[in-house]
Length: 563
Image (cartoon, rainbow, N blue to C red; front, top):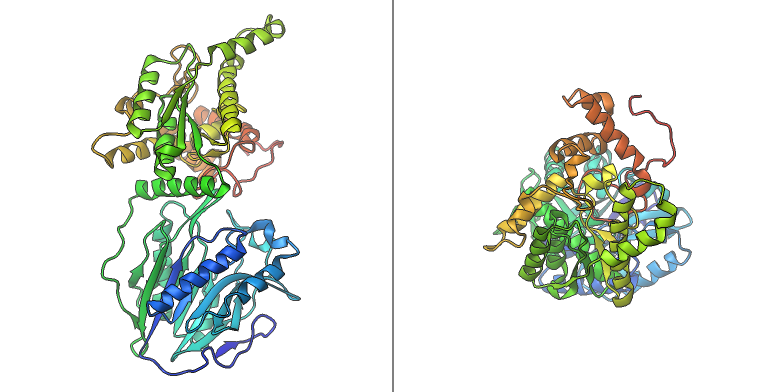
């Protein structure tokens, strides 16, 4: 029996199974899988195959992630006039899947509005639907732009249990689950598209444990997996007992059809024999970067990627991630030396390319740089040499990489990290030229952590040791070091974390014990570099606040850093 309190937002139905009978057990299948945004027909077909597979393994109910039919986040695809027709057509193709209840995330469009919804499908009929009530509108989420708010609770009876439905953010607020408990829910099913950030799985577990204990309700929590533009969904779907214990947990960053069986009389789930390996901070960060790059490149249709390999740690780590994501045969490394490029850099770049077995080309830029300088000489003849000449080197490299991309159809991967992008330590149309920046949300200190982590995975390091140990340098002038212009990265990253990730102001950061001149300089650099960042390629989000859709500042403003 599907039960609701407001028929403007849900169907009233009589029975969710055509031949109802009590059962000792109900087996749920958690379909942790990647559903590509916009590919409605293929997503429906994937649902069909997973449902049949789950049914053949003994599942009674299969649960898909939030908005799986359309993919998440669909953004302005939700505004397309043909959306409703396409969704209805796709749902109809699932009508011949028998003998298993399908709980499908989809966008529901009717005369009441557009809703983020879950449909209950069984034996060719839609038995009910639920509309998400709590619409997140912070960080990367923009759901109030697209969706109307659901206003009812929905429960349905199946084989002796009453199941309540929630969608993602609904579970992070107390109201929806409180109401389901009051109306007699025996169990909660939650559909989710929860993107990765560092330590997010621990937060999910804490939330689920608290919810289940407070309400004495078991929770079936299904999360999406895979990369979508700058977001990565890391899976980690779970089944939680009514006392807060985790009975089942799916591995992170992987497709998984996870089955869990509920003892109806006891109200408890069976427990998996072996839980997935827990991931360290570096491990989950690295896997997120690999998945984000892999899915962006492959789903965008590129045949391979190009990396400008400099002999420095950023490009070295980028190359490792690229090989792990796509395979060595699809990665092309190009070293572009100039007169300031050290012999050590040449040797280390070549050594790493050989170690990873990627295509490696040396393309000197001396003639290109000198040609540009010669062209500009009549205009620059009365101006002293400054960073302009350094930037010509970076832009010459950008021209070469983009020309190779145009000629061979490979995507250029840039190698800038979050610390550099924050303070503008990068060149527009130079080292920022490219289609994807895998380290965009990785601070420099984290780059070192990840490089050491990747080296520990194999007996023979994939990144030469001196790449990690020698002082970082852009090598755009003789004996150049990053710290000639910036505070040490340990100090810089600490200030940036407070200012960017934690939104602290000037005085709050000073109160943490930092030098006033250094703090003022760093904040000014960050604020003055906003125009660069809006022109930078996208990259994988791994932090609480990445540069991109969740951090939006005006390019022209007179905000005082000390105000």
